Image 1 (cartoon, rainbow, N blue to C red):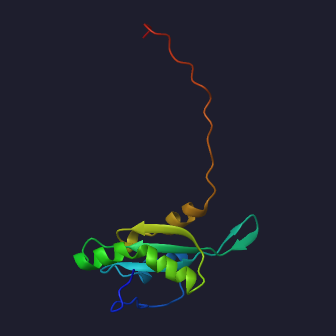
Image 2 (image 1 turned 90 degrees about the horizontal axis):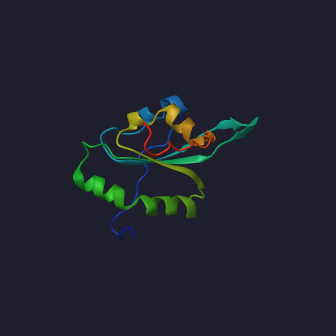
Image 3 (image 1 turned 180 degrees about the horizontal axis):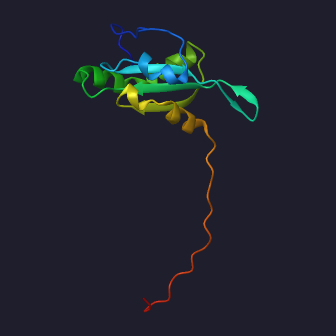
Length: 126
């Protein structure tokens, strides 16, 4: 739980597209980010919310520990108090790892490739 003398502050709120997302996230301090990913699926527009936790290796140790410990509480507060329904949770060391391809891949349907049964080789044969 978050202690009475601690609070979560909104560092910023700005509109951005997928290509500009990484540039809106601090590359020196850990951050929790919420991004509404608007895209089309089967001709219908969808706008799920993506929770992104970034923790740059150069950030202060205490900040990294605090942010790592409170991810769940932040998501719970966003859901209960903000009414956010998070569709995907992503983590990255650096905002530069958050690419349009990474986000798109998370929402692309996974295609299963079936392999036929491979008959085992007969023992003793090479």
